[in-house]
Length: 199
Image (cartoon, rainbow, N blue to C red):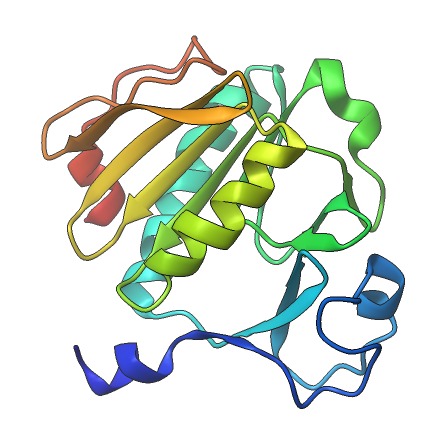
């Protein structure tokens, strides 16, 4: 693990003045002073997210471009890129790397945030964030009813597609190289090799 990876972690923000860990809500979150850091709340715990790396941001940009073309440009819904708040519950506020909300759920989109579960979220993970993305956030997305969750691994250059079935995510496959990504939420997606997201 590189020095950057060791310090680019998701950390419980125990030092931040507020209601105490386990009791943070959206109202406390929006009252935070802007200190230049990104924060999320999962199950009432406030986490600080340090700045992402260049490979992370490059993959996020490509994945957003891909979804924007296949969702927003063709008129199926809206796509967003972090930072944009998603309030999954009063005590769960996250900023997924990429978000897609289809037209049937457009009422969830407000000027300040999305309230409720988007149809699809994407997280680009690193060795330092994969635990958070696969535990706290994956559990929060499942509880909220996010239908599809993509976990992109910038180091391994893979994308795993998880689909929600009976409140539990089932893997539909780990895609890499020349594999084409398949979505169950956006069936009109045109095949693009996974390697393009990590170029």
